[in-house]
Image (cartoon, rainbow, N blue to C red; front, top):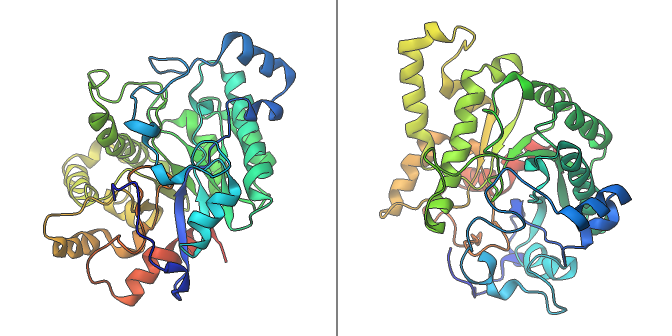
Length: 366
C-alpha cells in the first residue's frame, strides 16, 4: 500500500488476531538513547559522532521522500516522529488492527559502526531502550536483540545477557555486513541463536559496510528501495552455500522487508547450480530449496503483486504458505493493511497461517 491516509475498516471486530512481524519503533529525539549509554560513550557521541561503514555520517543515504518515508497520519498528537509514542502506536496499530503480537524491528546504526566498542555500546543501549519504552509497558510487543555483529565476542555477550528475557523474541542482524553472512566469523552468533531457539531476523537498513549495488551507490531512492531484495538474497545464498544450515540444522532465519516474489526463481536456480556443481561444496548436503523450506521464513511486506492477482496463488504454491508471515512495516509509507494484503482467495488455513499461526510457531508466542 502506498497511501498516506487510510480508510479504517473495523478490523478489531474480526475474530482473527494478527501477528505483525515488522514494526519500527522510533525515538522522540536523538538524545533519547543517551540515557541508556555509559558516560564515556555519551561524551564520545556528543564530541565525535558515530561513523558507520556508509558514505555519509548522521543522515540517510537517500532522502526517502517527504516526511522521511513515514505515513503522514502516523504523527502522534502529542508531537514527535511517527512510532515514537507508545500510546498512539497502541491506538493506531495494535488496537485498531487487532494485533495480538507485534515484533519490533528497532533499526539503528549500532550494528554497522566502524568503532566496534561503540557499536556494542549502542546496541546494548537500544536493547535497554526497547525494554524501558516499549516491552515492559506493552506485553503485546516483542523485541529484537540488537548486536554488534562484526564483533562476534561482543555479540555473544549481549545475546547471553538478553536471551532469557522473554520480552525479546528474536535476534536482529543487518545486511551489507563486512563479510558475507555465511562466513565463519559469524558462526558463534548462529551457534548461540540455535542453542536458544532464537530466530534471526534480517532487516535491510540504510546503514551498512557496503554500497547498495556491486558497482557503488545507486542514483535514486527507488533503486535503494528495491535493493532491499538484493541484500537479503545475498545473505540467504551465502548462508546456504557456506554451510551454515548444515552446521546449525535447527537455526531459524527470518527475512524481513525484502519482498518474496523472487524466492521461487532463486530456489530453482540454486537447486540447478547445486546439482551441477555440488562437488565444489560437498559440505552442502541437501538442495538449497530444502534448507529454505526447513530453516527460512519471509515476511510479506512489501508484497510484489502481479498484474493478475490470481497469479499470487502460483507464488504461494511455489513458496509454501507456511513460509510467509504477515507484516505491516508500520509506520512507513508503504505500510500494508491486513484487510488489503493478499487480494486473492486464500483458504482459511492458509490465511490464518500467514496472518498469525506461522509467526506464533516460529517465535514461540502465545
